[in-house]
Length: 386
Image 1: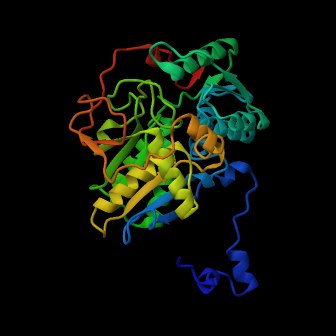
Image 2 (image 1 turned 45 degrees about the vertical axis):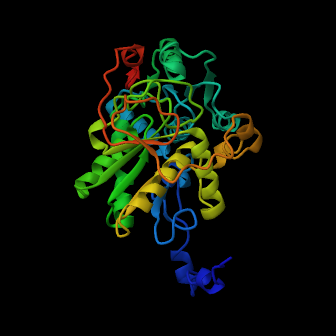
């Protein structure tokens, strides 16, 4: 095995006290000031073939993950507009990461926070939310058509009715969720200089739209690759049971910018687990479901694109909340997630409705689904204050 020479590790050590001070971590007067300016990491061999790789934006370096950015932004803008009154309760549906961001925003701006989740939320995340002062409400039965997300949103509506001054950011449909990611896109431009391909997971549609639109204004030929999960409805597949958290949807978020994407890849849970664990073994920086899925696709993009092209992938969080799922052997054995090394290339379909996908699959036709109007869009929660 090749080892990195100690001299190269020490090259970055300052040679004077003044340099040591300049190189130190930034000081922050508030926890909110720790959000942003996250690093990028080169992900190369052995995770990728020799001479190929991609740059990963490590959003797990935020206190709670990528959605710290949008939680702080949506809350701040709502306060400026008067939609969120001083001291009023914030109520929202979340699978975890936005909940952590809202807990941070609640502390930063002085608001109580209630989050609605489902049994899939990892126990450590629920524990952290309570430790940060948030109320955690768990629905126990999925909606017949809209699944757990719709059941959570209906519970949010009940809580808003019970708290007349409460406000809901409604991350699925709130355009402020998109606007919040402009600084992240600017960070990528400053860090990488040029980006040819962006690989990004799609859940609420916020960070994919917010980052992608800004980057395309800098790089008109930018290729945007969306990463979804099997059994998600976002890109026209039928809804089904989904084990993966943080990407995919059983409703149709209005923040998804369908016209932005050049192609979409669906990734199955065992494939995401393989990639997340392979990242951990080879590059140390890793994460959960979304990170594994994005890394798998970015790895293939890097291998099949010209060597001079530059690929950026957004890793929404780190591994810590997934110690009882993605990185727990017992959990993975129970859900048949281990021993499924992905193929070298995805399957390919020419239209999202051509077949129901159950493994890594690519489609270069991206259209806006035309779902029947359901309660998912009729709750009217965006920026709601009751």
